[in-house]
Structure formats: structure tokens, C-alpha cells
Amino acid sequence: MASLKSSPAWKALEAHRKKTTGLHMRDLFADDKDRLKAMSVGLGGLFLDYSKNRVSAETYALLIDLAREADVEGWRRRMATGEEINTTEGRPALHMALRDPGGNEEIISARKVMERICRDVRDGKMTGATGKPFQAVVHIGTGGSHLGSAMVVRALEAYRDGPDIHFVSNVDGAQIAQVLDGVVPETTLFIAASKSFTTEETLTNARTAYAWLTESLGDGAVPAHFIAVTANAGAARDFGIGENLILPLAEGVAGRFSVWSGVGLAVSLAIGWENFEAMLFGAHDMDQHFLDTPLDANMPVILGLIGIWNIDFLGAEAFAVLPYDQGLGLFPNYLRQLEMESNGKSIGRDGTVLEAGGAPIVFGEPGTGGQHAFYQAIHQGRRLIASDFIVPLRTHHPTGDHHQRLLANAFAQSKALMKGRPGDKQPPHRAFEGNRPSNTILMDWVDPFTLGQLIALYEHKVFVQAVIWGINPFDQWGVELSKELAAAILPEVQGETASRGHDSSTQGLIARARKAKEGKQP
Image 1: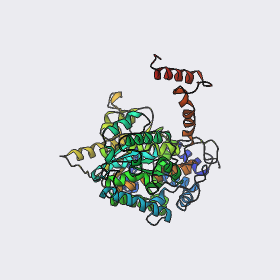
Image 2 (image 1 turned 120 degrees about the vertical axis):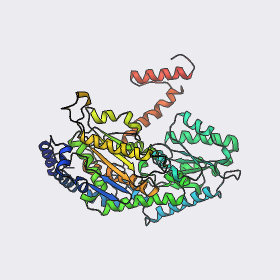
Image 3 (image 1 turned 30 degrees about the vertical axis):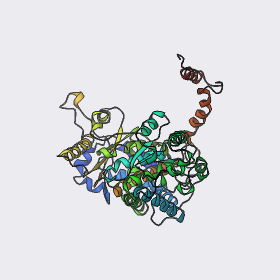
Image 4 (image 1 turned 90 degrees about the vertical axis):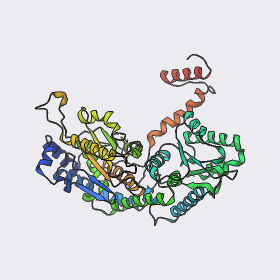
């Protein structure tokens, strides 16, 4: 791959950055009274205001040149047509196909099986081994096979009318023990979601659930109480799951992009098939916008380019995701994985060391709680932190004037980050530089369609940045080494094999763990 920093578009942006070092957003707004109109874009239930960034019309034009030079248009076409853009694994990236109502036959067929299961469970036609309808669903997964579904179920709480949904993702036994203590074997359905059906956390928890179920109902109950979502149907069958209850997960779908697949079964069980389908339609609507809209008016492209400007040219090391909606409480966690597992890399898709880019540190929590936790560092800290405010204009829980107060706080925070408070008439500790970049994404409200749009918006934003940086965002080799080492260390911790060949730290930690297991003082 050609050198990114030596490319004409990158060099033009670097020269522009040097020329505009002292530029303050206060001046940009003073010079253009209608700046919002030029730097905003809407789509359906979403409205993106990107005017509160250190970006002039010239900056934006140069960023569009960078996107064209990187062939963002060509790469988005290759993704949409199913080319093997996941080069290290020789796979396409098929998450858009999962929500395409006119998609390929295999995906449509899998979706129909998922719909049947959803309707049968919710209608009481599909029951447990003793004939009782399911009242609780335990989704067992980890990482991408967990975060998306858990986030959506919480976000769409207002639409929940199905069985109780519980999520288990941690191999720490405390989590599954707590969940199992609150459900009844006869009326509990388990969903084991793992593409390989070998993921340690998922299989360990699934085996614990299996033992808990069979202790009460016997081995014959398993086929009636377990569903698998996997690309390894053989392993699911060996576990005891019936063929008609194995939902396929295509190899071309990375876990963090999989909520649209059978991994989202728990979501559909919680909110009903019609609402789950509305979420698919919302994501598809954003897909069409991303594929068909010119770069300079394209919402995901704009978000991606603004992020690159903030990260690579202004030095933003972190990115705060700030939803002003309690239901979106897991959205920062979801985006943390989407951004940091996709683009948290130092090696490009051509195998060379990256010259620039890579995911920032992503964090956040709902406002206004975050205002009293970490906003101090965003406003006055030495490190530049870019922010996205996600603000539903309407609420499912109108209580007095709470929502208007919430909106006022969100708008005030973004204004304060932009404008600051000059220090000429203030003690130094009360002065705010301002000029801190942020985007504001308004949602009509959090409904299935608009949430689908929002998730797809960030999926495509991450893809745009990956294309420009030269990253493959669909693999995650960085997590493999620790998995291999954990598999080797496990029998040593358990005392089944001798511990040897480690560094002194690891050797000592294993020794102390073995003593603790034996009830001895470490």
C-alpha cells in the first residue's frame, strides 16, 4: 500500500492544519451565522450536527479529497457486492446482507427460521420438556455475540412484551450462578451464541447451564431447552441441540456486526418479530444512504472523516460516547468494541506497520451521570477528547420536566465544549479554553427503526476510517494469543500438570493460585 502520509490529500491536510493551528470554533461561528445549516445532515429519524468541530469549509473539502483518494466509494461497493474484503481470513463482510429484505436465499431462509422460533416461543407453541411455555430466556455469548443484543434489549425496553431476557457473558461463575438462581428449569430457554462453538466463555457457561437443567429435568430435556447460533452446526449437534434449533451464523459476519443475525434472537423474543424487523429496516435505510449518497452529504462518511481529523491531525487520543438516554446505557460499551476491536490495530491490511490512525480509546456513559464523573477531563484536561452526544428529542418515560432538563444539559455541554470561557476576566482555574470537538446526533426518539439506523451509522463510520487508514476492520487477531496461552495455563492452575517454562511473574502467579485452590495460604 502506498504511504498514507506522503499521499497528496494527506499532505494537503497537514499543511492546512499548520495554517489553521490557532483557529477557534468561536470565530468560525462568529464568521458564519448559519454554520449549522452547512454542517448538518438528516436521515429519517436522525440528525447529525457536526458544526462544533475545528473544521472550516476548506478543511471539509480536503477531507473529502482524502476519502476519494482512499477509494472509499470503491471499497463500500466491494463490501456491498460480497467481495472478500476481510483479506486475512479470506471472507466477505456480510452484515449488510443480513438486513437486506431482498438478500440472498440462504440469509432469507435463516431469517425465516428465526422468525418461526420467535413467534412460536412468544405464542407458547414452542414449550419446554414438560409442556410449559417459556417465561425466561438466557442468552449465553461473549463479546460481539453478547454486547449487541444486550445493548438493544435495554435500549428498547419500552417495546418489551416477551419473556424475561437474561445475558451471561463472563466466565466468572458468579454471573451465571446469579442468573440461574432467578429462573426455573421447566420454563427457561437457553441460547448459546458462538460462531465457532468453541469459545471458552460461552461453552463453559453453556455446560454449566446444561448441568443445571439436566439435574432437574434429565438429559432428554436438552433438545427442548437449547438453541444454538453458530457456524459450526456439527459442534452444536454434538452438544445435544436439535437440528431445527440451530441458527446459522455466516463465516462472513464478525461477532460485533452480528446483532442482525440469529445472534439477535433474544432481541426478537423480547420485542417481537415486527419490531425486530423494523430495526433491520432502519439499518437497511442507513445502508442505502451510505451506498448511494455522495461523500460530501453522507452521514457515516462525515462522521468517519471528522474522526480522522480529530485523531490524526488534532491529536485526540480518546473518544467519549455520551448518550442522553438511560436506555442507551450500554451503547458506549457496544461502540467501544465496534471501534477498538475493528480498528485497534497497528498493522495494515497489506501487512505493513501503520503510519497513522487506529482506534482511539472509547469510553462513556449516559448523561447526566457522566457530567459528574469524567466531563471535567473533557472540558479542562490536557489530553484532547472528542465527543459524540446522542440525544433523543422525545422520551418513552415523560416525567414532569425531566426530559427538558436532560436536553438542556446535553445542549449546554456541547456549547461549553465549543465556546469555553475566556480567562481574561476569570481566575485561571475557572477559565475554559473551549475549542473541544463534538458531534451531536439527535434522534426523534429511541424506537426500533431509528436504533437500527444509529447502529448501522457507526458500523459504516468505522469502515470508512478503516479504508482510509488501510486497516482490515473485520478480523481480530489480537485476541488470539491470550486465548492460546490461557488454554495452556489452565491445567497448570488446576494442578493437573506441572507449571514450567514461564517467566518468573507468571510462574509465581500460577503457584499462588494453586496454593489457594488447595486451601493453603498463598
